[in-house]
Image 1 (tube, helix red, strand yellow):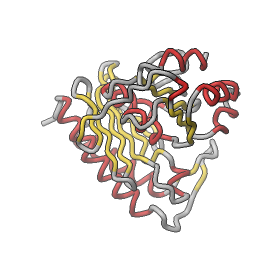
Image 2 (cartoon, helix red, strand yellow):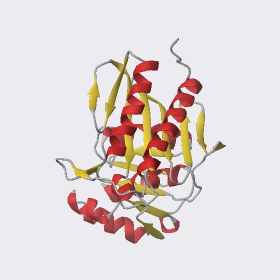
Image 3 (cartoon, one colour):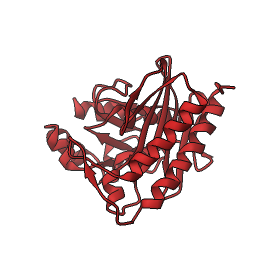
Length: 256
């Protein structure tokens, strides 16, 4: 019987992201082969095996649902119910033995972002959220910070080079000058820091649908926002900003 309530979907996502994380840890800090895709991003056997596990679980439990994954593309299914998989977000960190990589899984149903899950296996951190059910960090209700001025904010990102690549270095310089602290706690880790109140703003000028879709419910249910550079909540813009909500107007003013 297919489970359809949000809490059951959250349990499904959490359970299988943990299983995928176990696969990633089998290869973490090991001497494994690194390949490079057409966009020069790295990929390993751990990425592929992690995604295969998640795909098998979805196909078994929800055979009529669609799947969009980083490594194996799009699987036909209901366009009204689509799962988004990033089997290892932060593969570069993973291949260098840095523990801030995560397994990401999100579900979008009838144009609404219903479930988001990010598991950071090397840190044993779990962020899970469901529409109307809240966001939880390691089993405790998560919430964003109360910082209300950019001059007091912690700004995280994945690297200045990504702003350069998108010709948005001016935006980076504005954010750097406006905030109290800047750190390259990037990839999904940076956005989870915002959702859990440990950072206040995370800006990514380059994102894919499988990066963004899981983050939207997590940030929203934690009381924050996930938008593109124009303030639109979407997984399709190729960019993303996580904030505590209070700081969103000020951040958008610098990103315009």
